[in-house]
Image (cartoon, helix red, strand yellow):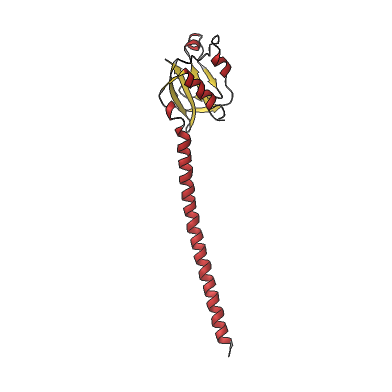
Length: 163
């Protein structure tokens, strides 16, 4: 006779346990979806912030000092190259020098529609500072800058051409 109330209590406890587990799974699923959306938004914001450091080089005019500073600043970026075409290396029938890495540019350095990074570069900061070298970058020279993007629209390089 005491069995019926105990069975009701056991059934109620089982029902409540199932209800709490169901609510917990639902809340966890909702929270995980929200966290995925938040993570994607965070990644997009990070990518946009990473790209802002290149804004000054988007079709702008830079001094030679700024060009050398950019070479030093971006030297540690693994998939990135800087191309500098000076007045001296144009005359010497060079097509400029790549620093840090070479970027294979589809339209050539004069029309960089998009590029792919190739390891290795011909230019050195020592030659850029040596007035006797064709790669010398005059600190007061004026250079037109242009960004090189890859097929995914990620920035892969900067091209500087002396005016």
